Image (cartoon, rainbow, N blue to C red; front, top):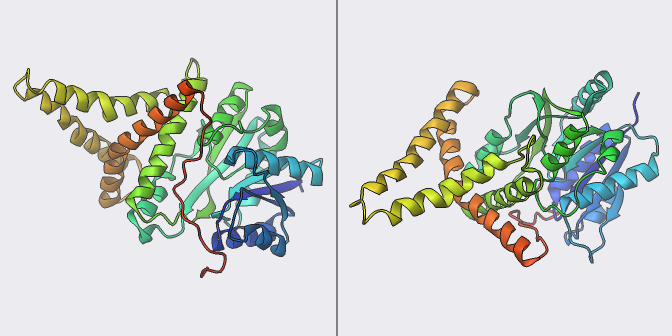
Length: 337
């Protein structure tokens, strides 16, 4: 049996954290919870359940990347010969069978650094925004360029690339995967249930903030690794500028000279929406309603994506420190589970 540890990170996750840690401790021998300045009693809860805890220094900016790095370092202190580490966000619950499946895949494939599976939204029917998350996470299985926040990784591979970049406020997992692939490692997405996620995203403002954060990550990722051969998030970055700024600006600026004909450029939005809708109907197991909702969200997201990119470059040019873009609301420890 391989030595397996787990690192969970969170900030004011409340009852979601309780579910996460109870399930983690039931399945994994060594569990470390890293807290990023919670004010809802998360640290006390984690300790009462039996998790080892790390409280991040308040004087250093919080990032999920930094939290995961410190959790991994703590695991090494507890178990110096740890072989595999499962990372999980505090709003997620590990599904039965995932740990064994992930371990067996890593043990059988020495060229694979990390494996991930299917993350599902626990309450997709609660809001259209939760539903969009569930659709977003249904990605193709097989060799992948990246993983999300939940995955199991070979400890040696994590150490070889020095873990996550602690300065990144978003997109830290794909960025680390770029560096892993540069070292010759592979990333696999398995056809297996992995985690249940509880987004509790109920408003358009939350959805917009989440998309804005993604845009920030696209800009920063392409700035760091946009050259060949990786071209990391270059396509996503250019797409946001095209659909979020260039196309509407050109259509409006040329409206008078072309006697309004330039406004036909705006027909590109419904055409792009239909193209995405048609693709998902053909290539994913999805209903027509869900495909339509997701297609509309993909096109609409170009605008908050652009906002996030502008925010990144503004801070970069002014030499300002990156700040978290948060969309979640605090979930009380004592709330119903």
